[in-house]
Amino acid sequence: MPQLTVEESLNAIRPDWDLVSSGAMSRAPLYYQLYTVLRGAIYDGKLAYKSQIPSEQRLADAFEISRITAKRAMDELAAEGLIARFRGKGSHVTYQYSPQPVRAPLVGMLENMAEMGKHSSVRVLSVERLAPPKSIRELLGVPVDELVHKLVRVRSNEEGEPFAYYVSWTAGVRRGYTRSRLENTLRLEILRDNNLKLTHVSQELGAEPATPSVAAQLDVEPGTALLSVRRLSSVDGPRIVDVLDCLYNPKRYKYAMELSLD
Image 1: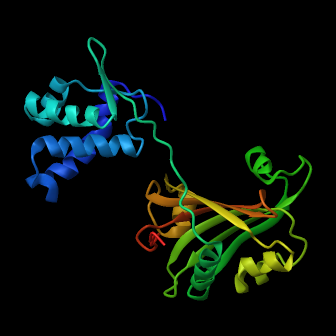
Image 2: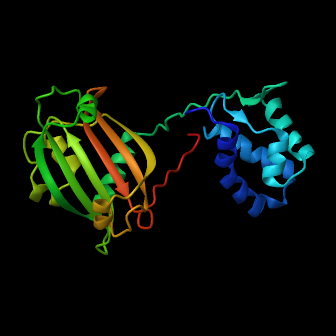
Image 3: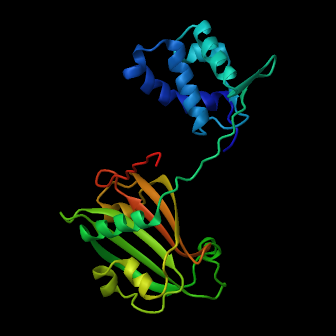
């Protein structure tokens, strides 16, 4: 992530400060509230490595606290090795954020996907074979002139309310990739019928504003924040055969995980 200026750092943490100072933690000492906000922003990468932290006085003025309170919060961060303080140069983040993937058995994930398929319906908007754009081609590792399947679908719940918009690019499919079958059969089964047995799936979660065309399909206003998931599915080790981009209406779909030390 890019290094932030002092003003950018203040803007980055202000929403978190508003939440902490008005929520259950508002009863905690002010220095601890500020320390918690800054520590959280550093750990999750919002305040990136080498970003400059606002001075004690700037923090005091911005959040209407005393300079002594701000200093104590900064002292706690420095004691943990999260920031370094240099005379005449200010304070900078020394913690290097590195996102780590959550690892879980693929079988459980595929079972959950199959279960969702049983309790929802799919409408295929388009299915065609064409040359993918460069970014997709490089992920799939296919030649410039090779055609792959592009599939656009909308998934609805049992009440008929659309909640997911899918765009997928798949290499190696030879049969069964028809509109009728895709609307009546789990896509995983069709991939298996083509000897594409998934051995690894990686996912990245984020958020995207709904474009007018997607908004029309998901019954939301253009610009609505949607949960985005990019899923890369592989066979035979690292060979990616499927790139799936999912957009979910957060009012109708929740992404939940349960983790344990086991």
